[in-house]
Length: 287
Ligand SMILES: C[S@@+](CC[C@H](N)C(=O)[O-])C[C@H]1O[C@@H](n2cnc3c(N)ncnc32)[C@H](O)[C@@H]1O
Image 1 (cartoon, rainbow, N blue to C red):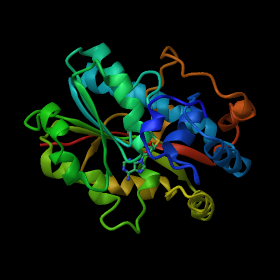
Image 2: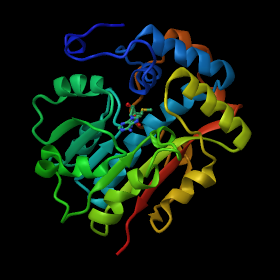
Image 3: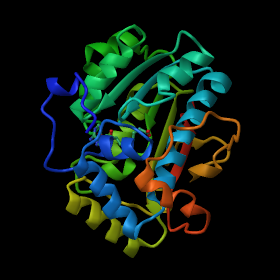
């Protein structure tokens, strides 16, 4: 672990990995522990595409947020399961397109709040909340959401690489978590962006879910059809729900932090091994 003054303030879970820290490591982040790194090294033995797809998801985030601000004109975001800060966080991408853009970051892992506060200390148009996206009512009532989000204007709600953390066995999840704000509160013209890890073969998907749950990370790999069915009634913008690397690819977008040395051998695996991929897109609420 690269220690940080903020980590000392929170009760850090060390007996099992957390998604925020493990995923952050694949993006080149430093705020992780051996238990997080070992979890990734275990998973990639059987699902070697995971490093590529984590990074493809993060690059999709950049393109989706840029699209929403620059092309649609949305300036307010709720980023559910936002993860640890890294390069090109949602507010940085959004405020580069529109300096007035506002972002509420939400994550269940308190380490995100500790690190997010440091990043956002001088940015009054952003806030980070420790909350469970399966309880959208509490997120709506939070004082920072009320301060930053005007629900009489279109909003974008982001669920990027978090669909697999919403299990069908959770009461109300995933549908309530994904749909409550966009269906019940947001005005037409609002958007939802969502993605999750998918495998076409349900048997292999179940195998991956068992592996992650066994490591202590709540997980449900879905098929693309299962994930897509959660968004009925919303209008996907072009090119629809797809493998994220095919969502408006832009070779000129900024690169991510370098991949950690231990994971170098997995870079580029998805060029030939397409078993596992991140699937999703951007959808619009119609009138
Ligand atoms: C794979 S990371 C994705 C981070 C970021 N959205 C991105 O796309 O780069 C998943 C994040 O979801 C968070 N998460 C998992 N379950 C959650 C829940 N029930 N409520 C809020 N956040 C959750 C994890 O703590 C983690 O930071």
